[in-house]
Length: 167
Image 1 (cartoon, helix red, strand yellow):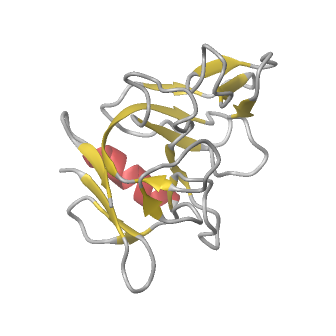
Image 2 (image 1 turned 135 degrees about the vertical axis):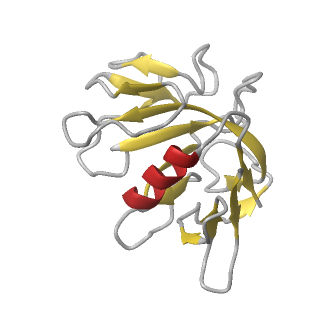
């Protein structure tokens, strides 16, 4: 069953067939993504690619998706003019890259959403993830964020061919 993200009167929610769960999205809402750093959570239907998790903090998520522990030098390139744009890189990296090994807990579980990855279009947007929400569900930079228990439940029930539908 697809994961469906949509607005509600109480705020954005994600539902995968087990009832809507509160989620956080970008501060500019759900729309056609204009470019890197626009705060938009992209509308569309996307595959879920890979799962990364902080093995020093949490147990491995149960999922059929490829999964690996985050290393201290893992990053995600967000430099539109770099050949590794919107890809996993090792830090330090010569171009701009987001650190996946964070002091806060929002990247303790990260699911890569298949946005702008086949093919990668420079400047269209990078690092669109499904990850853990801040305790107050503050807006993300453009990702979708859930409570840990909800993200784990969605991953456990994820089946081949399931996608995320945003909007």
